[in-house]
Image (cartoon, rainbow, N blue to C red):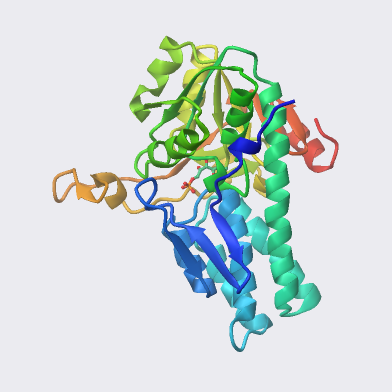
Length: 347
Ligand code: MRU
């Protein structure tokens, strides 16, 4: 029996009984733990755009609560709530959990009208389901990992990115609790440093040893340290299994394949987008090159230098050994396996 209770303490967001959504401002971590109280939907739109809340499942949950906030605003009616849904929808393009959660809220809106209570209940149900999915995935993923394994991960896929234990980081937490990890490496994840700022902060609180590596060191460390598993989350999984995740994931999967390591993607079914046939159809978010031309608010590149800042990439399904979801584990995910999974028949 794996004990996960002590790894389940960090939260990215909280619904406040007085009717506000509190978000832990992830731009300030690990230096400062400051909560933002959102009383209006546009505060949630701004928080998603600015990465105060981030990580695919957390974005979806925050957006669902954003719709509940919109329904509480003076003069709220179906048209105004629908306009708020559209602003939330446009906040970030790649993580499909955002559109998935908003589609669920749209259905509630259509069924109940501008019923603030029903929209809040739906947001809470989405959060609770993600919490439960995290736990199932953590245990199922850890089950695939042999004792004495070395693991590499990227970005932050933990409690800060979800409602609970996390996706990839949930599996890592469970594998650590089961005593299976020989070594753990986290990529720093330039330019926003989700690896060094957020993942190391979460792991530090849990007492899970991890070494930070520069993104450029990843291929060499996979070879040199005999990594067994690259474990990553996902922002959108296509009908054929191609997977968008934080920029750098594709490179890790290539290096893993070259050196005999396996790549595991961990994501709830809310990240699977059957309407997107394959990776080339995914809109990849490009952010301001200024994020890349400096570091920690300090300009590094010379004035006038240009940058290109795509923040996600797509790993083709053929490089993914294992897909872990709350409905089951797919080895060598493909179109047929994913259709089976979504049809309720775990692969
Ligand atoms: O830009 P971010 O920080 O929102 O990107 C997050 C990621 O790429 C995560 O790996 C992904 O959302 C899965 S998180 C459970």
